[in-house]
Amino acid sequence: MRGVRIVEFESNDLELKGQKIDADVELWDCSGDEKYNKCWPALGDGTHGVILVASPERHTGDDLIPWEREFIERGDIPMNRVLLVLLDTDQTATNHSAISEFRVPSSLNGVHCVAASLPKDGDTLRLEFNSFLVAVISQVHDK
Image 1 (tube, helix red, strand yellow):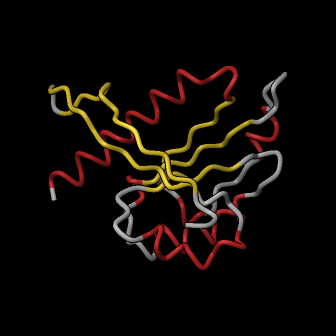
Image 2 (tube, rainbow, N blue to C red):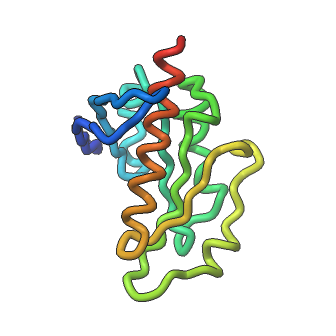
């Protein structure tokens, strides 16, 4: 599919209700470019969770609204299965002011938000991602 990068992997560092579990994960990255919006409905089909990634230096909270409408509202994804990552792309220093000034739209209240810089916070981001996976798997499994 043009405009989409699909990453498939097995995550075996997860624990659900005291049990170690393995999960087959597919991440569909639609690049954030609206020129690929024709393929968005296919991306949302069968989605169990959504990860929104924004760069606080380049984006505002309002930039998230089209993604919220397309993938969260249309897919009927509950807010506890949405992760917002504010990704600081500066390689030298974290831009704390850009992160603190970023305003999440009120329609996304309740979404878990993580601010991270890849060079510095890779381990923290991995733990947040694994926690998100466990939450999604738990809710889907309990349905």
